[in-house]
Length: 319
Image (cartoon, rainbow, N blue to C red; front, side, top):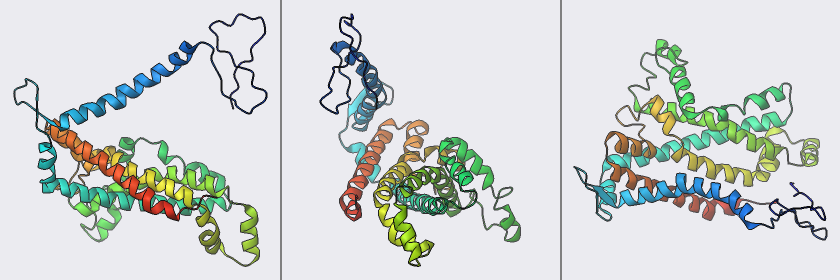
């Protein structure tokens, strides 16, 4: 905890931050006699939030309810017409289906594999320190760099699956088969968030009392029984937190991987909602439609988060 500087009797402290002596309580907050110092600390943060969040969000709402004139001259108010046009488009509904498939598969894969690795590393077998460091690295890699690396790794002619293509020609080809392309971006996204989930799972496992695990081991419980009946039930708060984060990020943070690996293809098979916003807005120059799609995506993510808190959090036990 950070403690503020102590005030010195008789010293000139007109503009310097001064901590009020509060020996009777445990309050560690720092109080400034001059309120302008506090305001000076707050203003840069407020400007950053306003510039990079509130202003773009307000612009998206403005464009979503207006339509730009073909030859300039300002926007025309069209109400919900942009939303109605989008919701009548079957291509947009396909992107919603693809986004849900991607979210469920990538979240399940990333969390399941990360939990298994965390359970194994928590046993402190030979070389666990190496695995503990290596498994945390994937999250430090940017999504475009990761997509480029996996584009080569999963390439049908020279990548990891090229061996299978030599035995069964055409069994793996993300450039032509939509299912293969979807599997490729799911593997890449899950690999990226495996490290993120692994860190949280391992931290939570290290908080499980060793006496419980040792008592269960003495009673004859093996690795899987200890994990199922002791460790995983105690991890439910962490599992719920990671579930919310992974679902949210799968809808928002998948653009770089899709753009680098498949560009939404083949035949729009990997065109997720976030990528369609970019494609319609910056390639199709339909700014109003793209803004309306971003509003729908935001409402969808908020709705999914509310559903998770409303129905899944009931099974979480905070101890």
